[in-house]
Image 1 (cartoon, helix red, strand yellow):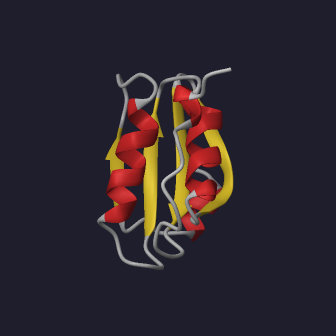
Image 2 (cartoon, one colour; image 1 turned 90 degrees about the vertical axis):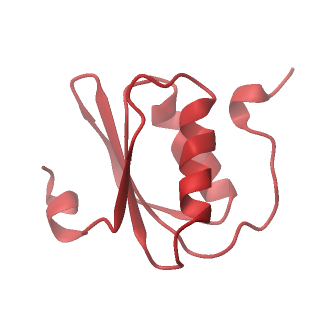
Amino acid sequence: MTMIEETVRADASIDLRGEVCPHPVMLTLEQLDRMQTGQVLLVVADCPPALRSIPFEVVRHGHRVIGEPICDGPDIRILIEKTGERVADFPCCCNAKG
């Protein structure tokens, strides 16, 4: 457990190990939609693109990543604070064409 994780208590957690892109992003955003403003979500994933895609998408949707994502072996842990309602539906970065 890191200092940030010892300081910030998660109100909910979601274990996305075994899920591949774009599911970690989609499931994280769905969980945040069910939470109250100010609550903190702990996301645990093991899909390497999630290290970038989850923080990128949650910020685009108006939420705040607390600290830096933590890599612990194959696991990635990300703390996210729900800071408001989704401001818009953006396409997932994993589905971008170009």
